[in-house]
Amino acid sequence: MKPDPITITANGKRERLDSACSVAEFIEAHGWKTTQVVVERNGSVLARNELRTQMLADGDCLEVIVPVAGG
Amino acid sequence: MTDKPQTLRIANRDFNSRLILGTGKFASGEIMASALEASGAELVTVALRRADLSGQRDKFANILTFIDAKKYVLLPNTSGARNAEEACRLARLGREATGSTWLKLEIHPDPRYLLPDAVETLKAAEVLVNEGFTVLPYINADPVLAKRLEDAGCATVMPLGSPIGSARGIETRASIEIIIEQATVPVVVDAGMGAPSHAAEAMEMGADAVLVNTAIAIAADPERMAEAFKAAVAAGRAAYEIGLAVKRTEAEATSPLTGFLNEP
Image (tube, rainbow over all chains, first blue to last red; front, side, top):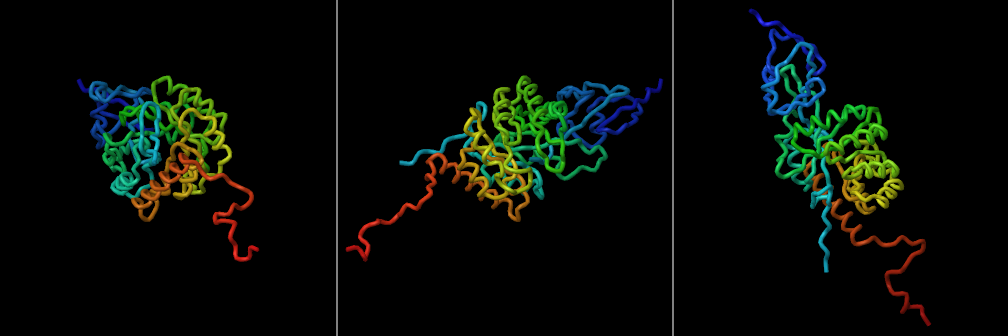
């Protein structure tokens, strides 16, 4: 059976995924290593070791955040 | 006899340097790193932003690779937060991203003057102190608010000298003097320090530290300007610890007032 596509919102933009994947897979598909970013999923910060175990679900809202220069 | 300079204690940590450096606006990570080294700073701010998911990264994506986490205490900030709720979210993200529980709490919804929102800052500080953060709040030079934040358990108060990046120096002097007089936590003068003399002035007034970013970052030679600020902070602090001369209305001669040529 073909997996169902899901739609999530990442950094304010809606994105359709062919099938559910882990948060880590999503980040890596967008050019980042899991060690470089920090992720908030539906309002809660994920610990680094949760990124690979947490599977994205339809309607999820992600904030993928990176430390930058700033005062 | 020469006394040793007093160390700065924030929360349970001692610092030899009283200059805190912001990492924004430098032309490159390498230039920032050399200025940081030259400044002698031990506490350094970073910001948090959404990662670019388009595949085209911005050049400052890896700011932490330019800061040796063993050598510096990271102070993630909450810039970009418009209210207490957003600041708390950014604080938790910053803790996860940097591994540091130290936090520069800043909430300034108005982009024109970037003046801090006192109500939201106090609200966020109360929540974050309870969550175990070491909170260093950026505030207007309001002595009453400073006391409230201290009572809420903040590790410092950080009143502004003048608006962020304005280089106007200490325009809030009278209020900062009251804050310093009343505070039982370190007072860090943050924002508006455009020249080393501004930083020295803050230290001579009895501020415990200053936070500088723009004046160093956009200087033609950031490394050398960092050294200049370092020297100014040390000079101002030494003068404060020693005690400045008392201002007088009338002159007081430095040469003897006897033995003049025309004396009878």
